[in-house]
Amino acid sequence: MERRAQFNLAYLLFALIAMLAVQQWWQRSQTVEVVPYSEFEKLLAEHRIDEVVISDQRITGKLKSAEGGKTVAVANLVPPDLAERLSKYDVKYTLRREQDRGDVRRRGRRR
Image (cartoon, rainbow, N blue to C red; front, top):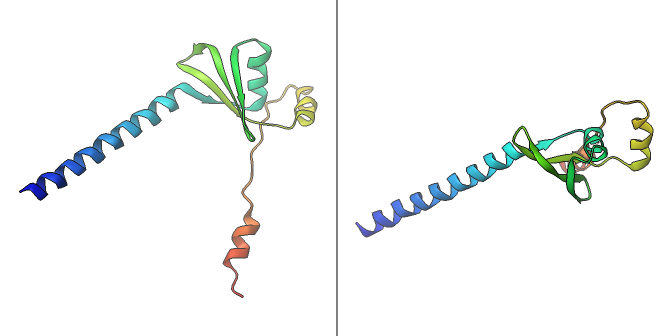
């Protein structure tokens, strides 16, 4: 009987952790808005972003006030010279990174 109780306790613990993970994911998806880089620059120009975090591929901004439940805006970084040229045409733009398919092909070949 003890072994069965341990087994059920393990499932209960797993279920609780899974529920917390799903809740965390759901909450984050409800507060983070992925926007084109051009939209992110517009938010900056309108002084609607309070603080910014820059990583190697993305820029994240905390909005000064929640907009539609969203408190964070995230965009892929675009090289500054390209962003400057595109801004002249008043179009939305963002950077999409392609996967390097060359590595996949090389691994699949037999020698």
